[in-house]
Image (cartoon, rainbow, N blue to C red; front, side, top):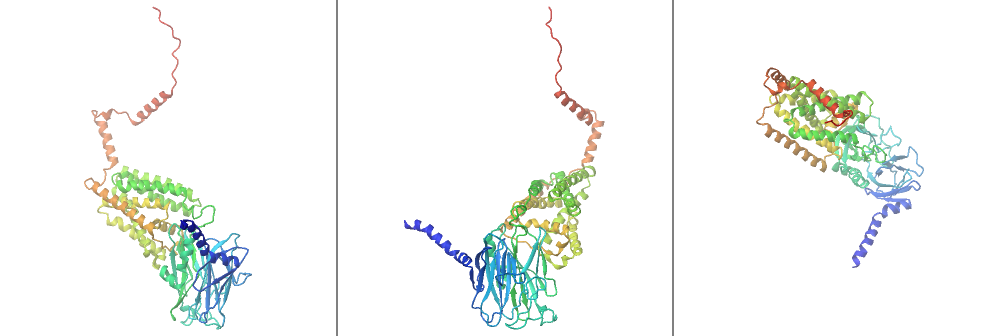
Amino acid sequence: MWLPRFFPSALLVLGLVCRREALVSSSAGLLELSLDKFRNVLLNKTISVEAVIRNIASNVTVVIFQVHSHQKNVTISFDKNSSANSSGTGVDKGLVSILRPQQSVCTWYLQSPDASQVLSTAVSFAYSERDPIPGGCNLEFNLEVDPNIYLEYNLIDTRIKFAPANLGYARGANPPTCDSGTGQNSRWRLRYDIYQYFLPENDLSETALLNHLRKMSDVQSVRANGIRLVSLTTDEKTNVHFSSLPGQGVIYNVIVWDPLWNTSAAYVPVHTYACSLTALVDNCFSLRRLSTKIFFTTFAVLGLFICFFGHRFWKTDLFYMGFIVTGFIFFVLFARITSLSYDVCLILTAVAGLVGGLLLVAYWWRFGFVLLCMLIVGLVLGFFFSSVIFFTPLGDYKVFRDDAVFWVTFSCIALMVPIVFVGCPRILNILACGIIGSYSVILAIACYLYTSLAYITLDLLRRILNDDFSQAYTNVPFQTNDFIILAVWGMLAVGGIMVQLRRERREVPFPPHPYRIWKRERERRITNILDPSHHIPPLRERIHNKLSQIKEFFRKEQPAGERTPLLL
């Protein structure tokens, strides 16, 4: 009986012990660190925390100290009274301490510029004289040696930039000059590898970030867990563009490598969600607008119908494809030419799509030319197929940074689809119905739940609307949610295609020309007086009669006058 009473108390004591390091260290103003060991610490504005690391080995020449927080800024400095040239403020900041001979202790100071408390994690890493020094040739930022990665983002792209590194050197020696030459004995031999790491999808929590930052802090962890996207030489610009993923946590880091000594060092990792966690409007929790949800949900309902019944209901299929083509073209025009808000652009896009879909149906009804209709359907499928090709790692090849190369290649792939299926238009239409219709369901899911599959077409739209997006790397995460949604998409597409192929295998490929049928029926009614439809009044007369009946229904009954009994 004593165990149930003791168990809550034991949990309380255990929780206090687990948080003892951060709380005690913060309140006491002293944080004892060990190399390569992460420590959590609570910071506030009134009391600065002194971080100290002792007993540094004599073969260590450089110590990089870094601190990370979830969303609130932290200030780190070499002195209690911080200055611009000896401190840094941000959510991911670090300092480089160049050790003097016989030095075995390093000290830094931490403080929160905000009034509220900030939970952060701190760590320090040591490097020897043969290891390169991140940010050792800084000429752009405030710190003399700056190991930080500076990140800027918007809804389209994310940009990182960092200071070039320098060669390592022994304690007490003069640092190598940064611009003395470009030979193998200078910093120009260094190489930079940019790594990317994705946090779990739909997880914006502080705990997840601080835990996963540990996998992207030191050289071995970064190489084991990160995805290397690009390698730069010293003569290339140290700034890189990435596709923004609003609501998806991403960590970036840079590994500088010295090929002569085969040594490496890591910069200070930086993270982003490509959105604000603290803004009152348009924050990470309200990214998906109501107008977007209404538009794509309606679009998905019609797409699901097209996926299974598109070829049978041919006019509805044409309307759907015409809506896609016209809506896409006019959305690009509205976004590039005008300064209208997103909601207004979406409404105008829907109106333009409706008109375009009706015009394509009207064209089929009047002229009945199947090849032109199938050319539009084939281009929609080819456009999507080309987008899928460039959604793969193939799209990040440097050759496709050139817009001319990209668009020529993209257009050739898109045109290849209608050319290949020119001899079997029915198969082409059924494939387009199944694939495009089912993908509209994925776009609707993306309005409520993050999925990387939405970026198949979104990245292409970004490239059209933003001139600088051609330089961005478009790597996206592929996690559990994406595999589930991909399976749903595959089942819908395959199911829709198989159902339509089985249903239409004994039917005529396409319905007859509607205008010819209507014209033939009209002539038959005029010449054949025995046909009951011959006696049907013209349309204008029928409309007039119907309006007259409606008018009579609402007309008041007139009084009949005085009534008297009949005299016998």
